[in-house]
Length: 89
Image (cartoon, rainbow, N blue to C red; front, top):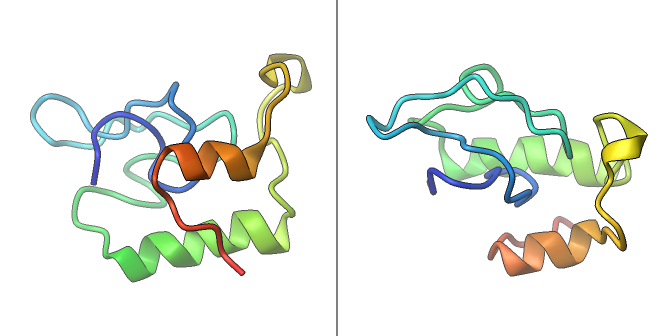
């Protein structure tokens, strides 16, 4: 798992793990996943995919944080592609 960027949605403004590879308990403003709660450094790929499906399919890629903080021209699928994350079907 990368330390920088959300492993669920690929939002770059999140630090999932610190310099000691420990969870930061940071909440992703994009998908709402919390490092140390929904996932940690030991999470399996299957577990990350399950959380990702919940956000992408069940919640239709809904922005979790304050609507005023949505990046201009935000595209969740493009964000995931740029982060190298497979988009759930």
